[in-house]
Image (cartoon, rainbow, N blue to C red):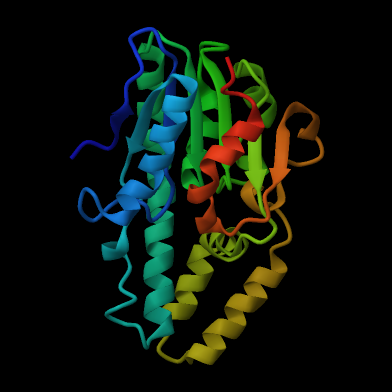
Length: 262
Protein backbone atom coordinates (compact mmCIF):
# COMPACT_ATOMS: atom_id res chain seq x y z
CA UNK A 1 0.00 0.00 0.00
CA UNK A 2 0.99 3.63 -0.42
CA UNK A 3 2.95 5.07 2.48
CA UNK A 4 0.98 8.29 2.47
CA UNK A 5 -2.44 9.38 1.24
CA UNK A 6 -3.43 13.05 1.26
CA UNK A 7 -7.22 13.01 1.62
CA UNK A 8 -9.31 16.10 0.91
CA UNK A 9 -12.01 16.58 3.57
CA UNK A 10 -13.13 20.08 2.54
CA UNK A 11 -12.74 22.02 -0.71
CA UNK A 12 -13.04 25.83 -0.73
CA UNK A 13 -11.86 26.55 -4.26
CA UNK A 14 -9.06 26.25 -6.78
CA UNK A 15 -7.32 29.42 -5.56
CA UNK A 16 -7.71 28.76 -1.83
CA UNK A 17 -4.70 28.00 0.37
CA UNK A 18 -4.22 24.40 1.47
CA UNK A 19 -4.37 23.26 5.09
CA UNK A 20 -2.67 19.89 5.65
CA UNK A 21 -3.05 18.13 8.98
CA UNK A 22 -0.84 15.18 9.98
CA UNK A 23 -2.17 12.96 12.82
CA UNK A 24 0.20 11.11 15.14
CA UNK A 25 0.76 7.72 16.71
CA UNK A 26 -2.15 5.34 17.17
CA UNK A 27 -4.56 7.32 14.95
CA UNK A 28 -4.53 5.13 11.85
CA UNK A 29 -8.14 3.85 11.72
CA UNK A 30 -8.94 0.15 11.78
CA UNK A 31 -11.82 0.83 9.39
CA UNK A 32 -12.84 4.05 7.62
CA UNK A 33 -15.28 5.96 9.78
CA UNK A 34 -13.98 4.69 13.11
CA UNK A 35 -13.66 7.19 15.99
CA UNK A 36 -9.89 7.37 15.40
CA UNK A 37 -10.64 8.27 11.80
CA UNK A 38 -13.19 11.02 12.50
CA UNK A 39 -11.81 12.77 15.57
CA UNK A 40 -9.42 14.96 13.56
CA UNK A 41 -11.58 15.10 10.43
CA UNK A 42 -14.38 17.08 12.08
CA UNK A 43 -11.89 19.62 13.37
CA UNK A 44 -10.08 20.04 10.05
CA UNK A 45 -13.38 20.41 8.15
CA UNK A 46 -14.59 23.11 10.54
CA UNK A 47 -11.26 24.97 10.41
CA UNK A 48 -11.18 24.83 6.61
CA UNK A 49 -14.71 26.23 6.35
CA UNK A 50 -13.97 29.01 8.83
CA UNK A 51 -10.80 30.21 7.10
CA UNK A 52 -11.70 29.38 3.48
CA UNK A 53 -9.05 26.68 3.09
CA UNK A 54 -8.80 23.42 1.23
CA UNK A 55 -8.55 20.97 4.08
CA UNK A 56 -6.57 17.72 3.90
CA UNK A 57 -5.74 14.88 6.27
CA UNK A 58 -2.38 13.25 5.63
CA UNK A 59 -3.03 9.53 6.17
CA UNK A 60 0.03 7.47 6.96
CA UNK A 61 0.70 4.14 8.77
CA UNK A 62 0.87 5.65 12.25
CA UNK A 63 -0.30 2.48 13.98
CA UNK A 64 -3.54 1.19 15.46
CA UNK A 65 -4.84 -1.23 18.04
CA UNK A 66 -3.81 -4.26 15.97
CA UNK A 67 -0.19 -3.31 16.53
CA UNK A 68 -0.53 -3.61 20.28
CA UNK A 69 -1.21 -6.98 21.84
CA UNK A 70 -2.46 -5.58 25.15
CA UNK A 71 -5.74 -7.44 24.90
CA UNK A 72 -4.07 -10.74 24.19
CA UNK A 73 -1.54 -10.29 26.98
CA UNK A 74 -3.33 -7.86 29.25
CA UNK A 75 -2.05 -9.71 32.33
CA UNK A 76 1.56 -9.67 31.16
CA UNK A 77 3.08 -6.24 31.55
CA UNK A 78 6.26 -7.23 29.73
CA UNK A 79 4.34 -8.26 26.57
CA UNK A 80 2.16 -5.16 26.65
CA UNK A 81 5.08 -2.79 27.19
CA UNK A 82 7.23 -4.45 24.57
CA UNK A 83 4.53 -4.46 21.87
CA UNK A 84 3.68 -0.82 22.61
CA UNK A 85 7.32 0.18 22.28
CA UNK A 86 7.77 -1.85 19.09
CA UNK A 87 4.71 -0.10 17.59
CA UNK A 88 5.89 3.35 18.70
CA UNK A 89 9.42 2.90 17.38
CA UNK A 90 8.18 1.47 14.07
CA UNK A 91 5.83 4.44 13.59
CA UNK A 92 8.61 6.87 14.55
CA UNK A 93 10.96 5.30 12.01
CA UNK A 94 8.29 5.52 9.28
CA UNK A 95 8.08 9.28 9.76
CA UNK A 96 11.31 9.74 7.77
CA UNK A 97 9.72 8.30 4.63
CA UNK A 98 6.53 10.30 5.24
CA UNK A 99 8.58 13.52 5.44
CA UNK A 100 10.08 12.82 2.00
CA UNK A 101 6.70 12.00 0.47
CA UNK A 102 5.02 15.05 2.00
CA UNK A 103 7.84 17.31 0.79
CA UNK A 104 7.25 16.16 -2.76
CA UNK A 105 3.51 16.70 -2.44
CA UNK A 106 3.85 20.23 -0.99
CA UNK A 107 6.33 21.30 -3.63
CA UNK A 108 3.87 20.20 -6.34
CA UNK A 109 1.09 22.43 -4.97
CA UNK A 110 0.55 25.84 -6.52
CA UNK A 111 -1.35 27.33 -3.58
CA UNK A 112 0.14 28.49 -0.27
CA UNK A 113 0.34 25.74 2.35
CA UNK A 114 -0.45 25.69 6.06
CA UNK A 115 0.83 22.65 7.98
CA UNK A 116 -0.22 21.27 11.34
CA UNK A 117 0.49 17.98 13.06
CA UNK A 118 0.08 16.21 16.38
CA UNK A 119 2.60 14.01 18.21
CA UNK A 120 4.59 12.12 15.54
CA UNK A 121 2.65 14.27 13.08
CA UNK A 122 4.17 17.30 14.81
CA UNK A 123 7.55 15.68 14.32
CA UNK A 124 6.77 15.31 10.61
CA UNK A 125 5.73 18.94 10.04
CA UNK A 126 8.85 20.27 11.80
CA UNK A 127 11.07 17.98 9.72
CA UNK A 128 9.28 19.01 6.52
CA UNK A 129 9.84 22.68 7.33
CA UNK A 130 13.48 21.92 8.10
CA UNK A 131 14.04 20.12 4.78
CA UNK A 132 11.99 22.12 2.28
CA UNK A 133 14.09 23.81 -0.39
CA UNK A 134 11.60 26.53 -1.37
CA UNK A 135 11.70 29.27 1.29
CA UNK A 136 8.28 30.59 2.36
CA UNK A 137 6.41 27.92 0.37
CA UNK A 138 4.95 26.94 3.74
CA UNK A 139 2.89 29.82 5.12
CA UNK A 140 2.65 28.48 8.65
CA UNK A 141 3.19 25.43 10.81
CA UNK A 142 1.60 24.38 14.07
CA UNK A 143 3.29 21.52 15.89
CA UNK A 144 1.04 20.12 18.61
CA UNK A 145 2.81 17.97 21.22
CA UNK A 146 5.62 17.22 18.74
CA UNK A 147 7.32 13.89 19.50
CA UNK A 148 10.81 15.03 18.64
CA UNK A 149 13.72 16.28 20.75
CA UNK A 150 15.56 19.53 20.06
CA UNK A 151 18.76 17.85 18.75
CA UNK A 152 16.71 15.94 16.16
CA UNK A 153 15.56 19.02 14.24
CA UNK A 154 17.22 22.28 13.17
CA UNK A 155 14.84 24.77 14.77
CA UNK A 156 16.72 27.76 13.37
CA UNK A 157 16.22 26.40 9.86
CA UNK A 158 12.51 25.81 10.56
CA UNK A 159 12.03 29.45 11.52
CA UNK A 160 13.75 30.58 8.31
CA UNK A 161 11.72 28.52 5.85
CA UNK A 162 8.23 29.29 7.20
CA UNK A 163 6.56 32.58 6.25
CA UNK A 164 4.86 33.18 9.60
CA UNK A 165 6.18 32.57 13.11
CA UNK A 166 6.06 28.80 13.78
CA UNK A 167 3.67 27.79 16.57
CA UNK A 168 4.57 24.99 18.99
CA UNK A 169 2.26 23.60 21.67
CA UNK A 170 3.62 21.58 24.57
CA UNK A 171 2.30 20.32 27.89
CA UNK A 172 3.92 19.46 31.19
CA UNK A 173 0.92 17.16 31.79
CA UNK A 174 1.58 15.02 28.71
CA UNK A 175 2.13 11.53 30.14
CA UNK A 176 2.70 9.98 26.70
CA UNK A 177 5.66 12.23 25.94
CA UNK A 178 7.00 12.09 29.49
CA UNK A 179 7.03 8.27 29.50
CA UNK A 180 6.59 6.61 26.11
CA UNK A 181 8.88 9.04 24.27
CA UNK A 182 11.95 8.53 26.52
CA UNK A 183 11.23 4.80 26.69
CA UNK A 184 11.25 4.80 22.88
CA UNK A 185 14.60 6.61 22.93
CA UNK A 186 15.90 3.78 25.16
CA UNK A 187 13.87 1.03 23.51
CA UNK A 188 16.68 -1.53 23.39
CA UNK A 189 17.26 -1.27 27.14
CA UNK A 190 13.55 -1.53 27.93
CA UNK A 191 12.90 -4.43 25.57
CA UNK A 192 15.83 -6.38 26.99
CA UNK A 193 14.16 -6.06 30.38
CA UNK A 194 10.83 -7.21 28.96
CA UNK A 195 12.26 -10.23 27.19
CA UNK A 196 14.09 -11.70 30.15
CA UNK A 197 12.04 -14.51 31.71
CA UNK A 198 13.82 -13.85 35.01
CA UNK A 199 12.31 -10.38 35.39
CA UNK A 200 9.08 -10.02 37.35
CA UNK A 201 6.52 -7.33 36.40
CA UNK A 202 7.43 -5.44 39.59
CA UNK A 203 11.12 -5.50 38.68
CA UNK A 204 10.40 -4.35 35.12
CA UNK A 205 8.36 -1.39 36.36
CA UNK A 206 11.09 -0.46 38.84
CA UNK A 207 13.75 -0.55 36.14
CA UNK A 208 11.63 1.44 33.69
CA UNK A 209 11.12 4.02 36.43
CA UNK A 210 14.90 4.23 36.92
CA UNK A 211 15.40 4.67 33.18
CA UNK A 212 12.91 7.53 33.10
CA UNK A 213 14.47 9.22 36.13
CA UNK A 214 17.88 9.11 34.47
CA UNK A 215 16.70 10.73 31.24
CA UNK A 216 16.84 14.43 31.95
CA UNK A 217 18.46 15.30 28.61
CA UNK A 218 16.77 15.64 25.22
CA UNK A 219 13.10 15.35 26.23
CA UNK A 220 10.35 15.76 23.64
CA UNK A 221 9.68 19.34 22.54
CA UNK A 222 6.00 18.53 23.01
CA UNK A 223 6.67 17.97 26.72
CA UNK A 224 9.03 20.84 27.61
CA UNK A 225 8.64 23.29 24.72
CA UNK A 226 11.25 24.91 22.49
CA UNK A 227 14.67 25.28 24.12
CA UNK A 228 15.66 28.72 25.39
CA UNK A 229 18.17 29.14 22.57
CA UNK A 230 15.40 29.21 19.94
CA UNK A 231 12.39 30.37 21.93
CA UNK A 232 12.53 33.88 20.44
CA UNK A 233 12.04 32.39 16.96
CA UNK A 234 8.79 30.60 17.85
CA UNK A 235 5.41 31.28 19.36
CA UNK A 236 4.94 28.68 22.09
CA UNK A 237 2.11 27.71 24.42
CA UNK A 238 1.97 25.41 27.43
CA UNK A 239 -1.50 23.97 26.87
CA UNK A 240 -1.59 21.87 30.07
CA UNK A 241 -3.42 19.27 27.98
CA UNK A 242 -3.05 15.50 28.11
CA UNK A 243 -1.77 13.93 24.90
CA UNK A 244 -5.19 12.81 23.65
CA UNK A 245 -7.01 16.09 24.38
CA UNK A 246 -5.43 17.99 21.50
CA UNK A 247 -7.98 16.70 18.96
CA UNK A 248 -10.91 18.39 20.70
CA UNK A 249 -8.90 21.62 21.11
CA UNK A 250 -7.46 21.96 17.61
CA UNK A 251 -9.74 24.83 16.55
CA UNK A 252 -9.04 26.99 19.60
CA UNK A 253 -5.30 26.29 19.37
CA UNK A 254 -5.08 27.36 15.74
CA UNK A 255 -7.27 30.38 16.39
CA UNK A 256 -4.80 31.45 19.07
CA UNK A 257 -1.85 30.93 16.71
CA UNK A 258 -3.32 33.62 14.40
CA UNK A 259 -1.42 32.01 11.52
CA UNK A 260 -4.52 31.12 9.51
CA UNK A 261 -5.89 34.68 9.43
CA UNK A 262 -5.86 36.21 5.98
